[in-house]
Length: 296
Image 1: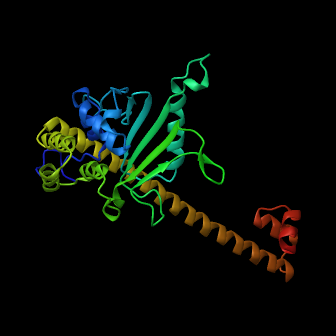
Image 2: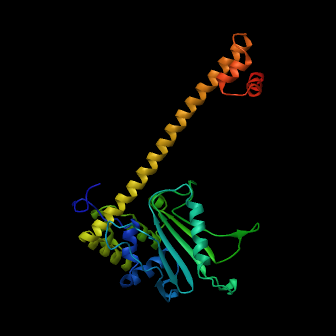
Image 3: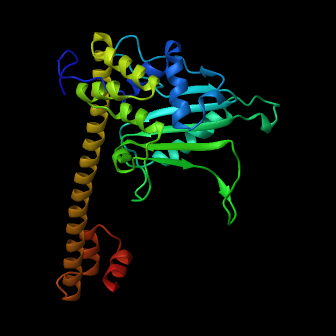
C-alpha cells in the first residue's frame, strides 16, 4: 500500500473512518436519512427525524488513536447503530449481541420502567462472509422469535447484517443494493460509473462527496493511516498465531521426547537394568507415580 500522497491511493467508503465522515456529519443528514431508509426498507416519508447521537469524528491529527467509529442515530423513536467491519472476527456474533445490549440499556435511568426502552437496531455492514449458508443472501435480519410459528418475541430487537462479498451473487434490484455497491467501490473508475448511473439522488450525492475526498489531502492521510493501523493489527494477530503454533509444536516435540524417555526407563526396569527408584528419579517422578506409569 502506497503513502497517502501517492496518486494511486483510493479513499474507500467501506473504511469506517471514511464512512463516518460521509454519514456522520450534520451537513450530510439527508444522505444519512436516505441510507437508513433504503437499508432498513422504511419509506422515506415515514422517517420524520434523524439525529446523530455520537457526533465525535475521528482524531484531528491523523496519527492519533482512533476511538469509537460506529455511527449512532436516533431515527424518530428508534435507536439505530451503524457499523462498518472490514476484518472478520471469530467472536463477531457475540460481540454484536453484546454491543446491541449495551446500546439498548444505556439510556434507561434508575426508577424508569422497562417499557421506556427504545427499539434498538444494529446495522452491521461487513466486508467478509459471516454466514456460511450458500442460500443466505447479502442481507440477513436477526430477530428473536418463539414457538412453532416463530412469532416475534419483541419488536425492540433487530440486527441487520449486510455482507458485501455476497452482493453480486444475490442481486434483486432493491434500492439498498445501490448503497452497498457505493460502499463496496474500490477504484476511481467504479466510483464514477456509480455516480453516472445512480437512480437514487442521494447515492449520487454521496458518491460525489466520496469523490471530493480523493483530492482532500487530510482525508487521504486519515484514510491511509486507518488502513495502515488495521493492516498492522492484522499482522500482529497473524504473528501471535504463528508464534503460538510454533510454541505448541515445540511443546509437542518436547512432550513426545519426554514420553519416549519414560517408556525407555520403564523398559529398563522391566529388563532389570535399573531399579524402580533410580528410574523414577531419572524421570522426575515419585516411585508411586513411576510404578503407576509402568502399570499403564
